[in-house]
Amino acid sequence: MKREFEYSTVTSSEDVQKFGSILAQCFLASPDEEQAWVKRMGVENIRVIRKQKEIVGGLVTIPMGQWWNGGTVPMTGIAGVGIAPESRGSGAALSLMQQTIKELYQNDVPTSVLYPATQRLYRKVGYEQGGSFCSWEIPAQSIQIKEQPLPVKSVSLDSEIYYELYTKQARNINGYLNRNQTIWNRIIQPSDKEVFYGYVIGSVEKPEGYIIISQYSQDNENILSVVDWVTLTNAATKTFWSFLSNHRSQIDKIRWRSSAIDNLMFILPEQTAKNRFIQRWMLRIINVEKALSSRDYYPGIETELHLEITDDLIAENNGKYVLSIAKGCGKIIKGGKGELKLDIRGLASLFTGLFSPQQLQVAGKIDGTEQAISTATQIFAGTSPWMMDFF
Ligand SMILES: CC(C)(COP(=O)(O)OP(=O)(O)OC[C@H]1O[C@@H](n2cnc3c(N)ncnc32)[C@H](O)[C@@H]1OP(=O)(O)O)[C@@H](O)C(=O)NCCC(=O)NCCS
Image 1 (spheres, rainbow, N blue to C red):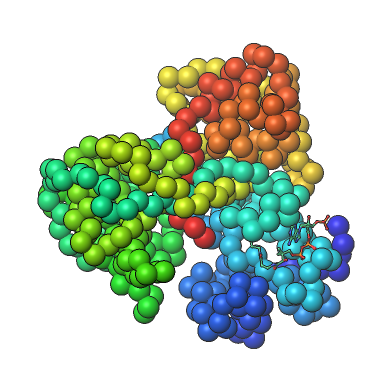
Image 2 (cartoon, rainbow, N blue to C red):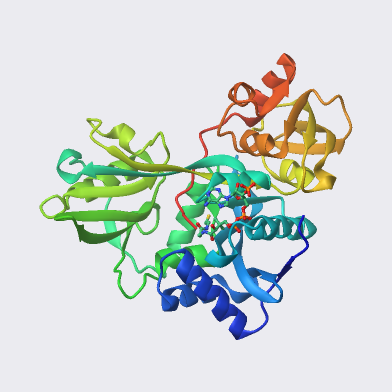
């Protein structure tokens, strides 16, 4: 690795300003917007890369967690990766990412997730596709659900009820964020230009979901955008749709984020929803032992998987491991027969369950005996991972 780049936190307000102005140019934002964003993310979470003492770029780390099989695993999100245009193409971003991952390893962080503008950069440092981020759209007229089994009540966005309901839903969705306050603030503290309306679905004593919405006009159409949602029961899902349908006299289209195979629209009479976009976020296993032992597994499985892992960046991750699963927990020790061979990227997609071991083998990401592939299938099977939040 080229030693010309120096990696550090930021100490002075000039450094914060310099990083903010690089990001503003990188992401076509105004300097004021970008400074405000950087401060919101927390100055202590900024990491910069310098060349001859000058800041040439940086990123922001977001400490949070992610849900897997009902338990949460610590995860650091990476956002705002930006290099000044005049310093691009010389390995600055690569060095920044490598050093960030090494720091996360030193701090015992098991996993990291990011949204890639380019996959190549992040694959070079061990990230791989982990799950989906997906937006759907439906003409309000075509929802056609009139039955509303539950009441809907307007509730202030600062209510604790949103956190509680979110967690109840999150534990059932692989890949869902265990949001930190910064992520929550984007939902409960809209900017001056936005108005969000929050509603709890069900009685106050026994809430079964919520919906937070915003409205705007775009290309001569009125759009209702679901900012965040939870439906814990069938009654809540029906109520979600009838509530949205009741906007149809003014609203042309409803937009919401969900999984690639969306279960919300499963109850609609017709398939009139269209996919607006689907993106894949990427995950890196920072620490093999911590990642595999701190996640939950299906309680009914009792088995053993022999892995052999390679990692170009974190030397400690290399080697053979035995992963033993029992009572929903995973124990990992070094050694074993190395029957499933994979690099740290293959392990990322296996860990999340975005692809089955058989699919990963066909894609050339893992290589294993028939028995090892079948055991891995059992261990990592689950619903397709996705998340509601972009960062
Ligand atoms: C993307 C960005 C961070 C790359 O910075 P950089 O310092 O030029 O990247 P590096 O020189 O370290 O390149 C490292 C590797 O990343 C890949 N890469 C870099 N920029 C790329 C691009 N625009 N498209 C595709 N791959 C790219 C290359 O594979 C490169 O490896 P190579 O030199 O062997 O080809 C920079 O172009 C940037 O700040 N862009 C605007 C903001 C942005 O899009 N940030 C990413 C948000 S996820």
